[in-house]
Image (cartoon, rainbow, N blue to C red):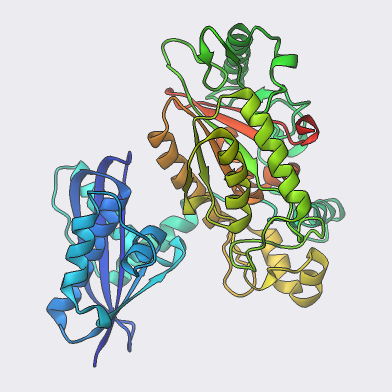
Length: 479
């Protein structure tokens, strides 16, 4: 019996927005690309586009050999889990697509496997080509061989891809100190600073703030950034009846009054409307947290410790007192779901699981301290410290890949929760990446932040494309 690999993907620029899918059928024995399919499908959501890509890939495989066994590989956790029968399909737009996909081959001939996004580049590229063609009013067609397209995409990625970086889950202190030591001694890879962030880590464009009331906003120029910050502070002060110094110490950085109800974010100028405000909550402690061990999405998935559960209850109490959270979205890992659950129980809200909020996968380093990784994998660790594109030993996720995932998740959530205040319960690397991207800061800036367990930060996204950041970086205000 022949075996095919079907890799499929879909995307939406707006969610919902202009959407397209891409699928590729690969001979499992030889690795040869047999068929490519892609199409622009008009206005649709990401999930619908992903399902359309799955259907197209399975149909292409069936046309080649209806008796073949098929291994489907996708970076959509939702589609993989639903088609594997482990998650229920509730959305009315996806039920008929899932049913259609299930009818193409007998169920016994098809298996489903989730893969990281960076391993699904072929299908992702096809989906983007289809969306680009649709934008031009054209039909997608394969204009070059797969090898040529892959080579072109690889060259483009090397020249244009961002270089995000940041410390690992619970190994923050070790990684930051190592980077600083390497830079100071000149014995390792230097920090690749850009502009004032290289030599002035405590300026207005640094990721270090002077206290819980500091709010930062990037813009086209430094003057515009300062003006945005002043405007956000002034609106917040007017809405809450408090000065920025005292009004910003609440858990979400937002205020409320009985007469007007909760404000959103720090307020917004009338012409921009209310921003989408993400209150970023790191999960409470696990047993690995105080030991500074790598704890990502590829490890043991630890639960909260007793200390972590207490932290979750305290932050839940603080957020309930503020009364500004309108929705809760969490990473699928156990520690974040437990932290989110404590808050949700207090606020009477449901928790939406978002796979894009998961922690970086640290491969073979999971569960190890920074010193243990240095001893066992010195060359891999040096490469990882020198470049955000380097992966941890054993095929973990690079920080460059993490940043691409977070950027896509951010865009999806901003569209879904425009004008609302949403609690995102996540991990060290994703939260720091949200902040770094909001500030337009270089990759090494992530090593200049420390993020305590159960600490809160917030980012407000405005209609003009700017963002305003507030860092609390402390859990003392929750006691």
